[in-house]
Length: 135
View 1 (cartoon, rainbow, N blue to C red):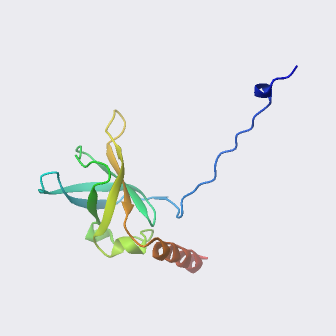
View 2 (cartoon, rainbow, N blue to C red):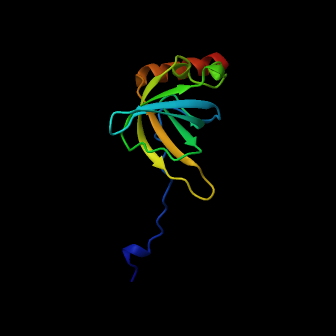
View 3 (cartoon, helix red, strand yellow):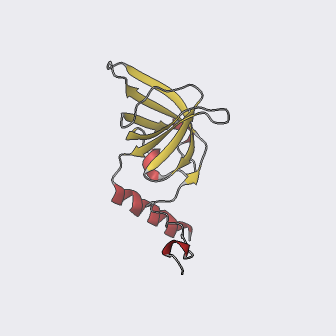
């Protein structure tokens, strides 16, 4: 007698559901936000990967920014002409929401994933136009 749990189950990895491609880019950037008391805070960070709708940044110091806090993300002005940088990041400050916090460990620095508050359709169109231009 064969049981149903003995069947060979093949699990296929799910397709990548991202709307835009992530690119590993390391450039300096800044964050600005207000803490729970309303005090303006600033931090220098380094990007690790970037897409048209999000960015992951790392900091040497621990940042006390909670999930879902709105922050201003800005690439340093001296590197805004970087070739692989999405057009939306070349304009200056971008309102962003913290959607993941990675605490520092032995081999990793404090990291924060940000969702950029840019119009998704505009970002996707920019990505498609850039792809056509390089093809």
